[in-house]
Image (cartoon, rainbow, N blue to C red; front, side, top):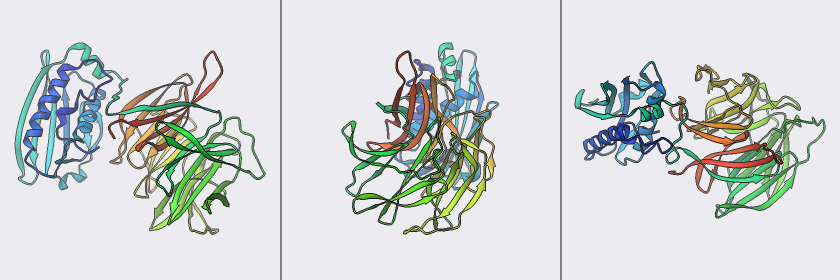
Length: 448
């Protein structure tokens, strides 16, 4: 997220999923209007919230919501570049990454105060270049108990500025992954990966039409799997287009390249690639191996040098946990972090150097996917009424921004794009009184 200054502006327009929050909305609107006027005649100003304290009746969860709502609204301000330095809230205080503060023009200090039946927002603007406070403002509104309860509630959703379900349709069972890439003519092709075939679709208005399909031939040994799990990877290397496909039924992943208008198998790999990344200015395929016939990955991540044409190259490995779900976040082709859910459904975060960071407390999950280095989606572990939690990871932290309700159980999550909107594909198994159904959903941000 980019903008933290007009902090007050955002509170309620972001809170579409909450009940009428006029008191909080008034605080935010007043504060935002003031800040918008303060920065109106300034161009390309870099700012950030560096302190946020709470002496009101709101909880840390409510503070996180308010902060995220404010920052998201501020992304619309054309003359302000806002850095999101928040790490998290604890005991009424925000913790911020201040290592970047020295490069900013203005720093913001926010404070919520309880004054009898009203809640006040104190706002201080500090000019780093002038080395002094340049503005202090205070706003006060009554926040009714119902609104207070809504802000403090754990369940929240912001459908206008957060992630929302943009597409849903039924698919045949055993769908394992979805990826997309632009063809030479610029048309987006969507690849649906099943255990024995890949079906390619193109978008026609708001629906998908079959374009092409080809069968997959797996060599022995072949391991029967109770639950089919697999991963696709699509990437370009120079003018060439490559595809890799691996699953938990075969010890080998297949590598294809587009030649003469057809997908042709070129090689087999002994691990399943997740990403094509650049390390020390050299391209690598990075991935892991499934436990044969099981629905989890082994406890090693493989790094194999990539070349075109492919050559047998020595790969190296990094030790992690056995994982029910695993993905890599990248930025500009560079590895940023490794996200992992272990076999006890606990979430783990590793840096690009494979140093484990302290994750969110008691964070559990089942499936996950990273959208570049910007967003992380993690499903809950529920059979009939699942959830998808969306986290902002743009500054290396983990800030929960949205919760999406899912009718059924999320089987997989994949980062992707739909009609120009970046987001996440989700494969959902629905078990009701009738036949079991497999639904495909796409979650994206309407405002992007």
